[in-house]
Length: 179
Image (cartoon, rainbow, N blue to C red; front, side):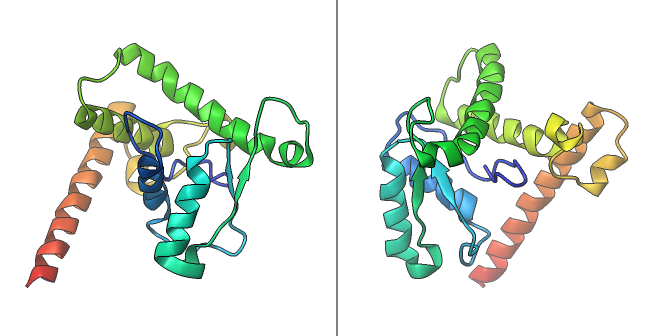
């Protein structure tokens, strides 16, 4: 999650919490960067895969993707790091609770493909359609084309259309690169 915009920028559905899925989620989050911003901070819980994933990014991309992990451990502010960075960890925990409240209703997934589709749709809803209290009940990421839709169904239809156009453009670009 980008703490400034509060948008979800990377995720990965997996049956485990190993380094591999962590790296894949981070790749998704960083895919639009040629290098990380100078003021970049990666704040996480105490999960051991994050420092290992950070090492992998440094090894693969060098100084452009070298970053430290600030880990906020435990539930209380017993140290200076926890006092300073706990609000960011709490932001993620709140996001997880919001997601889990909608996940429970679906009673789980039959397979990873279904899980990935469901999560991708939920992220689209969260980032582009859901009003957020901290953003004065506006969406996080405004898309001008969606402003003309009168209701949520119309907004979903337009968002799916935009997604289809993006896929079509990516396929066209891939085919032109193969020539």
